[in-house]
Image: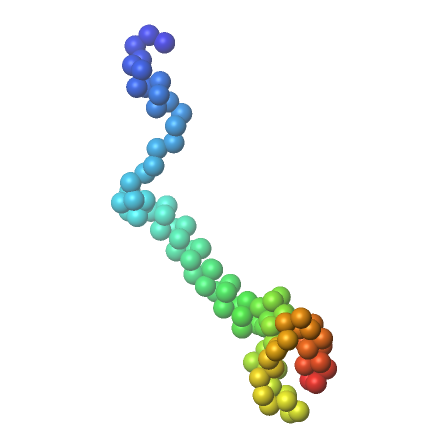
Amino acid sequence: MMGKTPKEYIMAGRPVERPFSDILTSIRYWVIHSITVPALFIAGWLFVSTGLAYDVFGSPRPNEYFTESRQDAPLITDRFNALEQVKQLSAQN
């Protein structure tokens, strides 16, 4: 306990933010981000291109918006009976 100033007691164990320039010039930063950023883009592209995004979110695929029997946009016009309208529009497919 002898020899330490009060400032050292206050700062002991507290995290200190690194300057942004230190982070950008760090090799560790570039190694991590050169792998993760392209991986996120590839994962997003695969998620959409395989059709998994349509299945997960339940949205129709581009070729399912219009059918032979219905060439107009499938709009919901009555918010109180929306579920029944969705069932009717789905049955027309």
